[in-house]
Image (cartoon, rainbow over all chains, first blue to last red; front, top):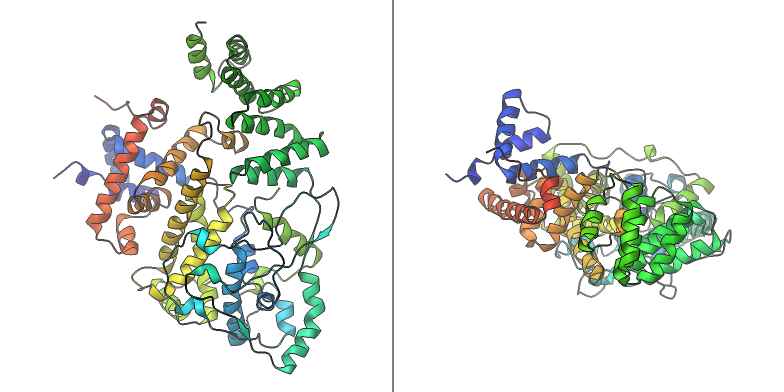
Length: 341
Length: 223
């Protein structure tokens, strides 16, 4: 029997479920003392268990389901598509809306389900039936490459910079037949509507106008900052930099602008523009803040990238003087040693 | 501040046009495994109500799986959930009912999120690795735990798909070996072998980095 077979997988499982007896815990402790593989596994599993609640307020599952299954999506299938616009982060919604439309239509007809827009459901006749229900009769690979899934699609969430407090109408969310779900011919959604249905739809139009399209309110500092962060994390660095700079121009006194100095500086540093980064780091350090320690380290790093060794040494020294116990202390000490100081 | 572009959109809509709370929606399906499988079969046959109940039932697991793989606050988290839900719906006709549908959905979510991670990483190639902007802008938390989680996540980008999936299901979602085997349709020993290889790769990566080794307490084994 190999050592692998002796790894106490069952004990690790039971520990995760909080079911370990004292003697079992002792056995597990004894094993991980000598087994680095199990120690890594045990720590990692505990780390992921202890991670902040993954379904926090910023990720509302109820909202997500209500949104993608919202009655009315069937109507949107029939709307002409506006000219394509860049849609970061929301490009898949129309596809799911198309699938959801099939579900919701049938659900409303079959069970009179009252969902997130239940008031409308109460007043409306049974939802029109869409056909064919292609997504449920076709067997396709579980996961497709997003490139084949997501043609650029307009969404209400397209976030372009807007002047402060300006309100612009959002383009309607358009869910087209999911042509890109596979390489097969795109299914065509057909809505059967009787004259009575159409009359009821017309009567319901004001309600639709109230709920969709929704007004897009203007950006504030937090929203611009969030968009900038999102662009940065998605790899769109030029757009991120533009948004951070826009934030600094438009809301220079906001906390987000101040934090942008540090983030944009680090962004530029990461992209190889050390001298540009230095300007933002210096701007941040003029007033300081909770990121001061990190920015001081980044500033030293920037000097190093520029080959300004004297400035770099001074910057690392300043960091160590200000934060002797800094998480960057080891790095600073190594670098100072390399610089012969 | 909201993490996703749709959140404020929805919030505004709710504020301006209050709609019924979610309590007006029938509660999610909460039956056992057999009932869940039967529900999935009805959904696969085109029963829209069953499909909705099924989606409500699996959504939390899908969200959790995608967030575990991508990390909290990932800009593509919501896309990953949507993509996973689409993948789940597409896969229903091929679902053989050999496991709980929510586990099946979570497995799809792990694969989906792993793919998104790989593509995001490809976009970031060429960046200065010494400069981690996300670390600066992200949450503070326990930096050691964050570093440990991150090394597992980045390893997923490099492992063969089956190994990465097994590692994610076990380390991130806490699944047992039998649950992984049941859901993936692989023999238990195959799952064990995949995990062994993945864990060896993780250990090598940890041991190669003194800081990481310190975070994991490697090198502190008793003589």
